[in-house]
Image (cartoon, rainbow, N blue to C red; front, side, top):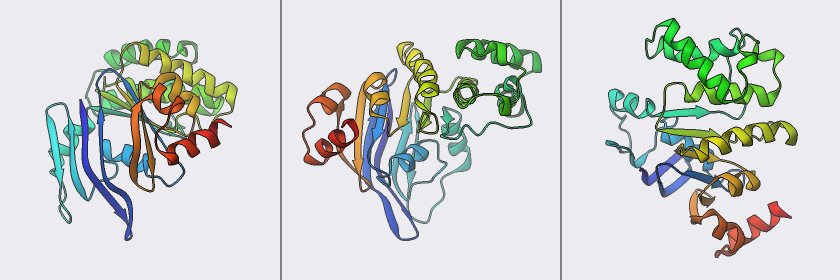
Length: 247
């Protein structure tokens, strides 16, 4: 179980997250939806501490960090949290000077200190998993957007994280290429990978996520099973959002 409790975050005096609490069950996919500026990407980035909350608490497994205004969390504790997360970004962020397989191997060699042979075997396994074993030696510039995102997913999975964090994983792709990525994420969900994703794509959330959280103006408006939230939203704000995007 991953718990975010009372998370607050401000930028330049603007409060982006307002005492947000979310529980992410292990072995399931949780989607964060909401209009632009609702705080969903910031909340996602708070889980792996790319953004440090001003207040609140974060727990992943046995590790808990509590945040206080003006205080920086203990660096070893931050590293223990980050070691349990893998991040997939909207714009792929592959290293352009490395091939697909080198991108997947890089963190295993430089961070986890694996041997090159062991990292190579793991990278081959993951590129096969995302359907790109034949592109192992391709440069990112020669790959389509969907292929680059699948390499990015393989890279995030390489160190066997406890949770995969996906920040708008399909928003930079046209529908055809997005379908490739959705298929990979769907397969991971079927295998029981714990995932937390921020997305504007309600079809992606409805298809993959067991639980959906709707945020607006930095606060949780409604959360629950995805089927219930999309088909029978209770709060008028959720109703308007769902109808607007589905329409």
